[in-house]
Length: 283
Image (tube, rainbow, N blue to C red; front, side, top):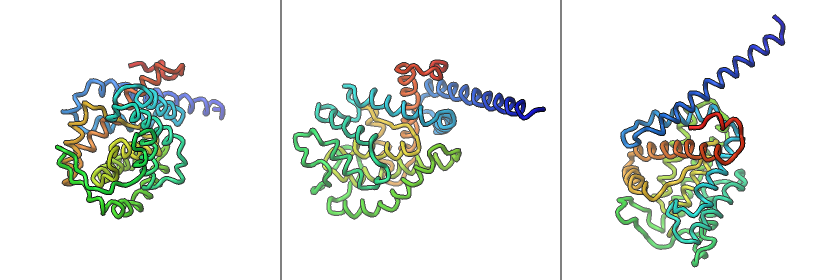
């Protein structure tokens, strides 16, 4: 058998394997679409994320990021508790900043830059990018927030951990090491909880910290997530449990939110582009 024939056979086999992966991915998306999230396990979102990672490439991920901004950031819907005009404009500016950011400069203090962008159109924009200097609390959350005097120390103490996390995220881009990928997602979520407990800013902490978490996700080509108003109660209850070291519910919540983005943004991308490879996988 000639080398050309061998090469053709290998190519056919590779294409068949890729087709099988796509079919598994689409079937998993359909199953996820009908799942009861409250009663569902964490296994289904893990499977969907792994399959997504195996079938999608960098080009598609760039489309997904743009779809995220178009659908959830640039429209007038009230996502991420952005009600006022200046809040919506600031959220758009922050995500534009995120998607043009030089990640070689990224560290824990990037959250201050994001907060400054978020507050760029605020009536009191001078508060943007500055740590709070008074104690605050979240009514009804049950979350114990840091005293304002300890904020700088607590942020500084996270610097080495965040540096390692950033480096890990960059190495996971395109990886086949899915166990490490899932562990990375969970470490990003736990960091998110730590930053919420520190609550470094007087206002806008959730949007800013979630923006930073999305930056960490995007380093590894994990779809960005958002939280809608009707999900706040579930989110806050899971966050309250994380305050006592129980991260199970908040990790599950974020896994499902990543899958929401995969499902919704892939459909949004398919409907708003002319890419043939997406037309074949209508849900």
